[in-house]
Length: 52
Image (cartoon, rainbow, N blue to C red; front, side, top):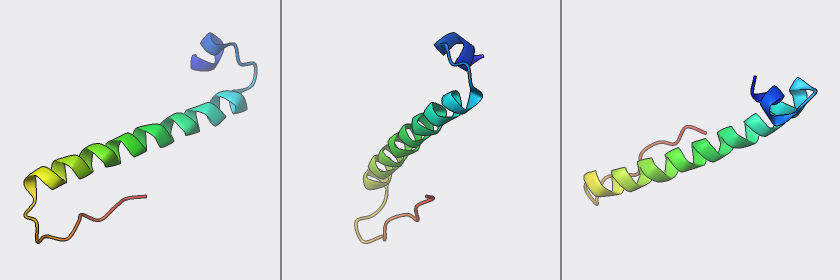
C-alpha cells in the first residue's frame, strides 16, 4: 500500500526506504531512553544495556 502511494513499482524499492525509516525510529528511541535514564537513574549506576 505504501509503495503504491509513493509510486514505487517494485516492493524492493519500498523495502529499502522502510529500512532507512526504521533506523531513524530506532535512533530516536535510543535518544529518548537515554534522556529518561539520565533523569531517573542514580549518577553512580552504570548506563543501561543497548539493543542494537
